[in-house]
Every structure is written in C-alpha cells, then in structure tokens.
Picture 1: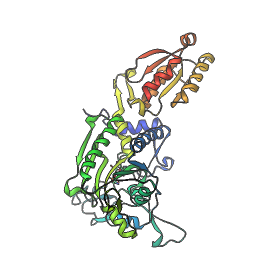
Picture 2: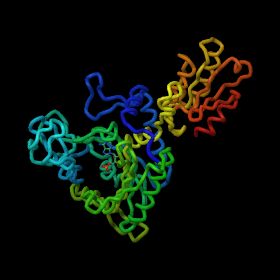
Picture 3: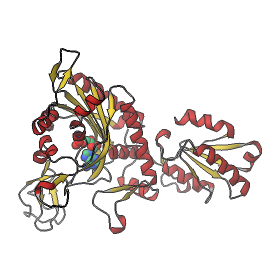
Picture 4: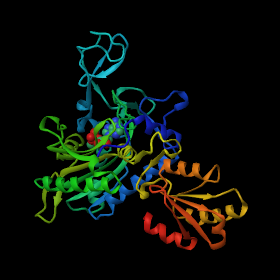
Length: 439
Ligand code: GAP
C-alpha cells in the first residue's frame, strides 16, 4: 500500500504550523540540516525514547549507559573513523557548490549552476566535526563530536561487564546525540548534521553471532510495527559483500517507505570483534571476557549492534500517520495525523462547548483529574469544529466536550479522531476507559 503522504513539504508545513519541528535558528535564516523539536515534537520524541528504552532494558540481559559525547581522540583512530569515515567529495569551481562524487556524474553539468567541466578531482572528506578542548589550540587538543554513540559503549565494555557482573550474552543500550558533517543532507529530518541514535551492542560468544543477529532482526522489526508503522511500508534490506562497513561480517537494514522512496531507518550489524580488538590495541588495556562457566576461557566477544535513528523513526511515524481526507472537498477536507493513540503527543483535548463559567468549571476539574495521568490540552477558543480540526492535525485521539447536558448528568462527549464518532460517557468512568485505551 502506498504512503498517503505524497509530498514531504506538506508534512514540513504541518510540523512547523503545529509546533512539532522548526528549522534551527530560523530567525537567522536557519542552519543547514539542523532542526529544533517544538513542544509537540519533543513529546513525541520522549514517547519513542521511552518505548525503546523499556523495550531494551526491561529484560535481564540488557543494561543502559549514558556516555559523554566528547571522547578521547584515540577512540576514533581505533574505531577507524579518522581514516575511513569519509565521503568522496567534489566542488564546482564556478559556483562553489559541493557534491558527493558517488551521487553525481562529474562529466555532466553542475546541478546548481549548470556549467560543465568545473568539478575538482574527488577527494576524501571526513564527516566528523572536530573542535578544540582546553585553552591551548594545537593539534594535540583536537577532539571530535561523536559520529555514533556506539563507541561510548565499546570503551565501557569492561566497566559495565564487571560492575554489573554480566555474563554473555548481554547488551548495553544507549540513547544520545551523534554528529556528522553530511555533504548532501536534506529530506527534512531524514539526514541531519546533528541527530539522535538509539543503539544497543549485544556481546556474544564468537560463533553464535548468526543466531543472535536473526533474533535481534525480528525483535527490532516487531518494535517498529508495535509503534504503529504499517508493515507494508517496512522491509529488510541486506548489505551485499561490497556494501559492508569495514567492521562488519553481516548487516541488515530495516527500511521504511518514505515519500522520496525506501530509506534506511535502522541497521542491525554483526560487528565481529573488530571494535573491542581495536580498543585493546590502542588503549593497551585487556578487554577480554573471562568465561567462568567454561574453564575461565578468555576471548574477545563478538557484537551484534542494533542502531536506529530516533529522528528517522519519528519521520516514519509522521509520514505514515499523515492523511488528508476528502481532499479538495471544501469544508469536508481534513488533515489528520493518525498516530497510534499511545504515540500521540497530546492524548486528549478538553473542550468546554462555550465560554460559560459553569462549563469552564467542569472542564477545568476534568483537566485537573485527567491531566495528572495523561498529557491533556485545554482549548476554549473558536468554534468546536475548528477546535476538533486542530486536534486532528496534531493527532489527538480523543476530544472531551463539556456541554450543558453534561452539567446535569455528569457526562461528557468523547469524540474519536479517526472515525469522528461521538459517544457520551459518565465522568467517573473516564479514568478506567483511558487506562484501557492508552496504556
Ligand atoms: N553505530 C552504527 C551506525 O552509526 P549508521 O547506519 O551509520 O550506523 C545508524 O547509523 C542509524 O542512524 C541509521 O539507520 C539512521 O537511522 C541514523 N542516521 C545515520 N545518519 C543520520 C543522519 N545524518 N541524520 C539522521 N539520522 C541518521
């Protein structure tokens, strides 16, 4: 089934109009491929993070950490990022535009200024952002903004294993910012220069990596579907032998059908013992695991990594949820974000039918009672129809309307976002109803 969202600009417009996502430093004209999450965006982000964190750490074999963004520069020498984390780059000498050499034909005209024969020779461009640490600016104080969260996990392998007395197989999970000086960023929050990753490294006995990779592949696909993504818009895409990263012996992407086509949302990688071995070599510290159940056998574990871009998962949720019903039919047209109720930033809107003291009093009491448990929005401005439409656009699954009949019999109208059906319910039944429908 094709996506209902045909054009990303419709979603970009909604995200700005309704407080999900703004361009970074917009008042200064923006900053290339950096985005700010507004009040509704950050709610959605926190919901996704919370679900991911629970899905990882509410199991006995995975623990979490939160490592620093800045790491010892040798980390990146050991991991291969200083030498290998590059894209081939060409510049147009005429208009100074910059392109990835593997994405354009350099014999053709420059896509920006249309001049032919102006491209420089391709050169390797490192995607890491560097900065200076301390007061003295020399090369010895160069540090990098991490391009992936994974290395913070690898360098803490022994700390975590020993302090938490973990036996193989076990995993370490982390959520955090990553930075890449992407040459051709774009497609809204799909490719950014600052983004967030949710990564888990699962340490296993060498030789068992295939079975663990299979299991994690399935677990991770299930997670995306449980968050509300349409299974028809998801697929596995294995990396061919010539596409594998320098550290991997197998890799599988989970792709989503974005409006611009299929794109990677998560990578499940079999990273061998590459990273731990390299860190052992560069740090000169012993990172072997001692298998006490097996005659104290010593070895470097293999690693299965699951790495999902938080922003890309959010983009997928928004793309899948976006729908324009009755397009072009005037008053009947409505834009709806059909997010799964559990993923909606605002769970319910409380709407007094009119600005009358007794209706407002009852509505405020509802807000007090329900707002302790769920994120609610109170709105008393404008016609009830317009208020419903606004809530539809931000994906609020339930609108509770307080009217004069309700004052008499202590009921409210619940209006459902997707069907627009309305039902009356006793106020004292609401808590249980929402516990059943939102937990
Ligand atoms: N530790 C492995 C790793 O970083 P990756 O495939 O480069 O692997 C993992 O990145 C995930 O991070 C991707 O599947 C994607 O969702 C997200 N990601 C990577 N680069 C991104 C960017 N520039 N903007 C937004 N998300 C990005």
